[in-house]
Amino acid sequence: MAAPVARPVKRVVLEVMNFALVGGSGVAVNFLVFNVLLHGLHRAAMVATVLASLIAMGTNYLGFRYFTYRDRASRTRRQIALFFVFSGIGVAMESGLFYAGYHVLGLTGPFESNAVKAASIVLASAFRFLVYRTWVFPHDARRT
Image (cartoon, rainbow, N blue to C red):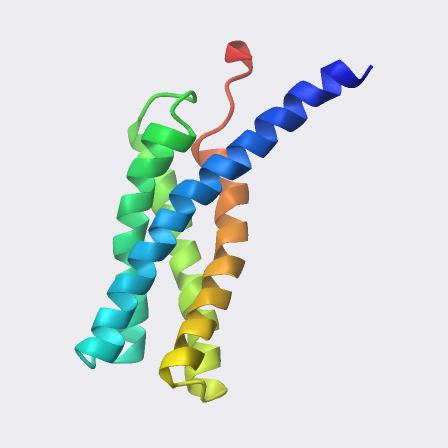
């Protein structure tokens, strides 16, 4: 009885690990660009967070498409459009959460701004994981 359940659980665990690997590289890109823009080039905080998120979104698409979800439906205009629509919603969520911490709560120092950025990424990533696996890169039951 455990064998039929173990296979789907193993598949989801592997998917989460691959999502985390690609997402982790996107987080690294996000933080690098964010810190260079905000603390290195002294750009506005919201400009830094939005640009960093958009650049990370582009690198994540490539990772999700060609690594995490490579076994799913082939690239289509619909898939690309859904990815960028849902990613845009994720960027808006992330930016709103960052705005609340940075501007409303006044967490503006280098450590505090990075902590707020991290929290906003984590919360928006939970949303992204659910919508990417459900609507952007759906599992094709015929390939099971």
